[in-house]
Image 1 (cartoon, rainbow, N blue to C red):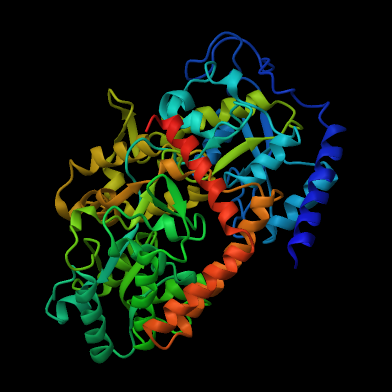
Image 2: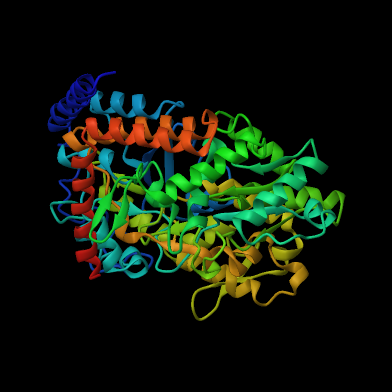
Length: 552
């Protein structure tokens, strides 16, 4: 599809959105923050005339704007069952049907938007905002204090739109490092090969060669879906270098006070040369760019990968470690400190990133019957009580009471009934829309510190020992993506297509280092022809605005 057709299609959708919503916002709130849900104080300390959660029934529709997302039925797990019974909240799911873009477009054109939309920050949110379709939260922040207290003013300011108002309720926001990105190693294979050093990129290459020779039915290096390990491992070739710079989501590398081309970046090129060699030596999957996620999972949980590098290897690793170690106490997975190029400081290598804004956001439609009541619920859900119940179920099962910091006091069942606990936690993962990272992580770590080594959670052990120490703060680089219907947005889509094609070609088709570099040279020329310089100028300006907001 040509750039012109892309722009026309997006512009038509935006026009339809504006026209449809102009005629259907009368039934909802104007977003002025006028109280509509009763008087008194909210469950967690709101002000006068605040909505009281649980005083009257609240029902709203919820849409997750992802192809992969299907919301579990509300009330069928222990946590939402308790919320439904005790807080009188019912959430009605609206599915994307595996076609999120088309679904949102259809709802926009019809003017029938869900009450809550859960989505990525960026272009879609701004499109809805500019059309006057979503509610600002500013007048709610003091009445319902959890979000303001736990996220902090700096994070909320970073989430504000160009008009200065806050429309986005963040998920897994944080003021401290978090994340699981890094290097996971098959323990049995590693031990059988004599625990060789795995510190440098050279060490890793030598180890993968050993694995290929001794274990022909095992993938030496599992790179994950869409070969995500390539992005992660750019961090190995430079100090203080988050993979975000050369990822599809940013495609811009800081140098001085400007953001420059990813295609000419030496670190990105060096990483591609390294992976091209791994591919040619058959040390990574030959279908690295096309394998489905289920295939990756099967390799990990059955022990058919020697090393796994990913943004969250612990997701499959925790399951695999449990299954493999049950059959053989010597089997399972460990994590190792991130590898680095020879000569670099290992303590300045960061395979993962985090930012204060967290993952994604929820927005509330103006067509919702009672936007303030919905905000009050989300604010309760992101607070201590909401987080305890949504993470670990109702009080009395796996926790009983709280300490002076409102952290749950976990019961014996929390460690004794690990199967039941994990089943409960897995049942609520896709209902955690407003996760409070600091509260959850600190509560978990406080409890883990009281346990003997053999009782500690496998995942928490590696988070505390390695992964949280090796995640890089990239808050200054949030919100760099332009709106899809802008000139820069159309350029970004074209550059992204060039980027994805060139990266795959550099790994799969290049026969030498010279070939890799030639592919990058051509990609740079192609990108510049579609306006990459203008996109980089836009991103640089947004970056500087972020730095100003952060006082950096």
